Amino acid sequence: MRVAEISQPGPPEGLKIATRPTPSPEAGEVLIKVAAAGVNRPDVAQRRGVYPPPPGVTDIPGLEIAGTVVALGAGVSQWKLGEELCALVAGGGYAEYCVAPAPQCLPIPKGLTLIEAASLPETFFTVWLNVFERARLSAEDVFLVQGGSSGIGVTAIQLVKAFGNRVFATAGTDEKCAACVKLGADHAINYKTEDFVEVINRETKGRGVDVVLDMVAGDYLEREVKCLADEGRISVIASLGGAKSTLFMPDITRKRATITGSTLRPRSVAFKGTIAAALREKVWPKIESGAIKPVIYKTFPLDQAAMAHALMESSQHIGKIVLTVS
Image (cartoon, rainbow, N blue to C red; front, side, top):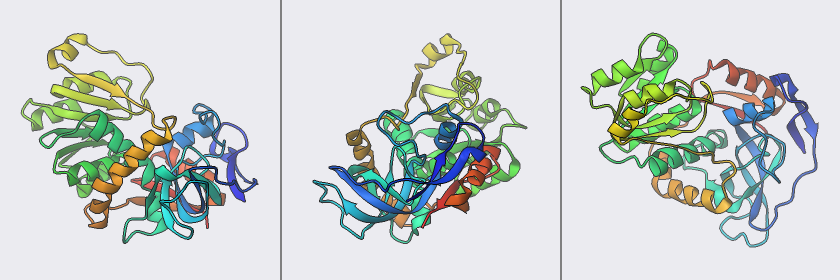
């Protein structure tokens, strides 16, 4: 099979087309003929050499796919040959064929193409875990997502808004802020021209936000605490702004704040399977109703994976970038 492999760590040009043996599904897995694969920040980090795959996982990048089941491993009964699925995988998505654990697969939401479906798993699994489970978003909570125009951001805005919450988002241009509002954000803040702490405290009359989804960390974390409501929760999923943060502890104790974080990729199949089940029950109907829609900025064929990564690193995109495979 054809794959896009990391020939050497470094710039996007290190992604090269190569030939690898087609994998076979082991017990509990399905083999999917890949139609499309989503491109995500962890793929970029892996290509740079700073985010290696977990032990035993292929070095081929790609964490989400959509396509057709062409083989079943022993013990798989919930999926059938010829069925179209999307799946979260720990690696291997940039290829013509990819194995996926059966519990991490989901049906294609009615009305979506395979390309659209390929843009769903990584961000929806991540947002559900970190916002709804770890940060315990409830009905009356006010929500802030940093990087609202990113793949995670457009998912978080739509998903949280679909459950009826008030949503704040930050983005780096007025165009991106307008896109966040169009997707459902009640207020979008251009972090290059406005102080999100001042805006949030003004717009909430000093109350603050209850849940923050943070992909920046660095000096953002201390500022997020300053606009956090009492009993507020911050869920950190990346550190694009720096790996070290300074916190003023009296603010943490006074507000009874919780700061948590997680990485999904190394978690067990069983753990990811519980998230898949929750998404199928609670989120897939909202996608099928049109309340939540995939936001795809651009697609590239597999042999242009390097160009897709260059676009990702430019941060010019709004929404997801997807590779078309077959």
